[in-house]
Length: 250
Length: 221
Image (cartoon, rainbow over all chains, first blue to last red; front, side, top):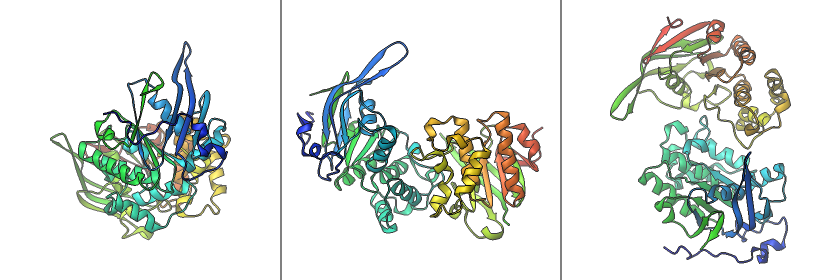
């Protein structure tokens, strides 16, 4: 598996037209871009360089899978793309907006509007007291948009959750919970859905339904970035980012 | 006003190949105006009973009914103004400030009108006023739990269910929360709290003990 088909490393993301319009949100630019990003974590006794000069572009309407051994920097990259952390140096842009120069409040705002983050454990992505429709509606509300009931139900139908619309998470299987989390992730048209090992806790049939959902929903324009060791996830990848010791490797 | 009752509630799970009778014929009644404590060891079925009462799970058999204004409503259709809960996992929204988490039931209902003042009062009562603009990850577990209790109280629900609501509190804060539950019961709500806190048992109007999926009146021996 060469993994390069369909995925283009942009040698110089600064040449991308998206960087010509600071603060703009061109819908046809990449979902996210990193340029020469360095991220170091300091403990009491040492500094660990998690990302060491990472340059990459995450396209919209595709599934990008981040692979690499434990400690290679996958989680650090995901946290930067999700606007949770800031790099020590280098540039991160999401939907055309600089993330690295934003303060915590502005970064949170950008994240709420443009990024969804899916945890590995399905239950952690959902609120136990809301039924499926209310979860999706709240997700849209938090993204600053309002959606018609028909759109919510249409999305649930598309994910095979039409008959589960009034169910709480406790009444859903792990796979159904994760599909509902995907629905909450894509509602309101964010640029990016970031998922950390989203199938690790699912059996094969459930994982495949989650992955098919992601693959189909990507077509509407959102960029999925998934970190995973799971061959089932790699099978749906349009492109790969391979990390080793905090660097992108071919 | 509303209370609720359950008759012969049964719920069985399968753990591996073993059936587990989480609820093995449970009868209970909690009336409007009452604060009732539900006690019992871990795994005795307390959380399963709360999950049935708030509509997260359905019983295999038996009947569950709400009285008064909520009569004939299946629990799964009841929203925050009618039935509120404090789940053990809290369920705060990470991207909302603590104040906005308290206001969540009003937001879901479709309007914050005249709830801001009550939210501010609850935050002040629970020693959270200075944290209103912080986010859940910037607060301690005890503070997050008090936010979850304030959220449940916001709309003065007819039925209030809480799963170990003082588990992460020191004595002083636990007493403040128990005062708030008592006040809500006196205002006409039916309040049921699952708790290991023996002081909570002494503050309750009644104690129900759960053991091996069965419920008896009174504190455990």
